Length: 404
Image 1 (tube, helix red, strand yellow):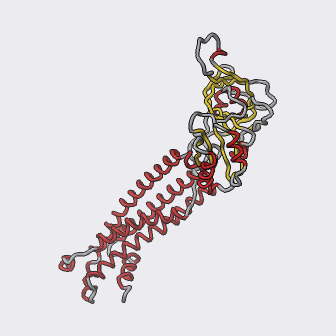
Image 2 (cartoon, rainbow, N blue to C red):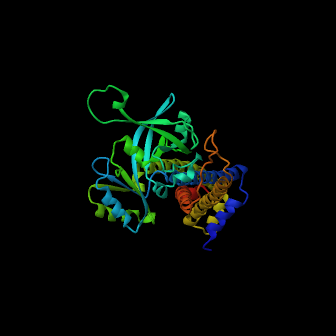
């Protein structure tokens, strides 16, 4: 029969072995493979969740396209650029931005902050107004209304709300030469009022959002000037095509970057971490497969008498090798199927309940994303190592026949 070797391998795995130790070692190899596959699937699913979380966190930081000047900070011929952008059917919204470091002072407290001054269209490009903790987004009726990042506000204790009359001070160094006789010679300053507070993250820490006019006044810039223009596309998937088209229309004075290019270093770090985690767990699975090697060797020793009978019935060397090879395959298959099932259950429960938290003092649950590609990655890794070990250690030389 063509499937004789596979049938015997199935019986070897499921039937009672010659000794309890052989049964224990065989199922230990299967359970070890299952645990390793489960752990690898869960960790990769967590990293998939972290990718989605990071995309959400930086969604309010970088737009689909960003236009900057190649020479200097201020955009040249900005009226021409605005006209070109306004006539492009692929562009949904765009906004002018000035971003600069600023010193913010309230009472006896002070800190260096990142001032991001924007026009009123900014929320259509990056909807940061939807994630405000408390207070309100600046109304843009006044140039000195600001939206302040949560941790910066906690350090400075600036009162928040339109009803407050207490102001903070933003200070920007003045360019120039000559002797300094008073503070006004060093800084441009403006009194500001905090209208609301928004949550920060690693890339939004210490950020203040204000109307564009505020930065223009602090920097002594013309009213129509900006450092960059951020763009929201109707179809973000066409970012590269729109970038190439705009680059031709705007000319060589401008530098255009997509969202992925703006975050190239950040995503490189994430992908590097994911690669190292994958390599670590691939190594764990590789080490686990040595339990499989031990199980196959012990099974060969335990089944010598049965091997003698099979040889007497006419089974050749290749078929006898296949019995142990198929036994290894079944152990690996059991580990992969059960491990992926268990990993899916744990991941699904985490998605539904958020039981495991990212830290002791936080309510943020570990993000998990179940993706089809993760099943292929984990299954392929376990299969490659498992099948290789099964093939190597299932080989029997001719001396095996002499000994039985």
